[in-house]
Image (tube, rainbow, N blue to C red):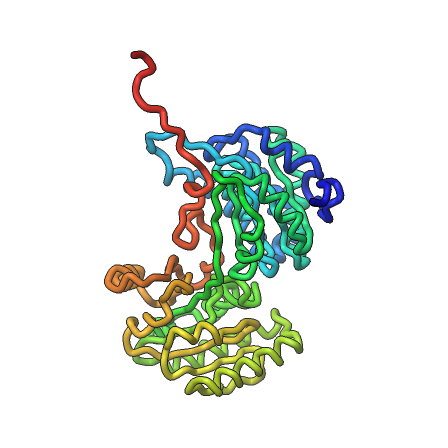
Length: 403
């Protein structure tokens, strides 16, 4: 094995001595004072930084770290008659194409009482750099977390994965199926726990009648934030739009015109993405009964499908590539509610109706149902798992200590 000091790692927070030293630090309590104070300070620092407000995803993360938000999260776990502490060292593998995911994973592990080694996105994002700068600044003022944070960049070197995995008490893999297979070739210690997030897709369900009564501009912004902000790379980004209601044709025309007008001055479609979208449209048209909806240009690509089938998930794309379906009944979405389906965002569909849908059909997928514009909102319950419980452990203290 390559000596640790020669491994090709760039340390963004911490240094080459930090990862192994973490294992000698005691775990923290869940929602420890050290963790909450740090995250609150990080929130303030981010919101005060020049340029932060240009990135809605950074602002959203900063609001997630606010004191009020942390208190609300902590309230879910209050009243439990148990001693719960962190597992120790968490090793996070962030997705390469989502800028802010690493920060939420790190924050969740910190609230669960863990130190963290974070492999940052391989793609360069200004949002990532902003958050890293803020973390460095705030760590200098919070010595209770000294030696508990290490953020690194490296390629696909298995030797690095092997080393960092060998130090982990919990490993969190966000990169999807191929990354999961790659990382799992690096063994964990016998008692270590793994949390893996596979490839998923999401959909939006819109009631056309309700849409026509709503604010088209506000709805366009909400949908844009869910989709174009991450180039539809996030698993939470809708790639299928399902319409319901009596006036769906009128609603569709108005909706897509508003989406196009909102995106045009804000989103730049790369030439290579244009070609990819055209290719996907042709492949889907050859395999299924579809129609390419007319739009002013290829900023928004709409593929109307005649039937929802499970295999449609394999034809979904990004960069403003949307499958579209008109439903008579909500249950028609069931073929695409398998284990690959993560989030359903809704407009004009009541939470009671969606709750009844899930209770009646109990789909294997569908871990989240959220209002349109909220798909990127991170929660400690993600992909059907409570991350705080998964990344911490209970110490059982039973009975009296006398005989």
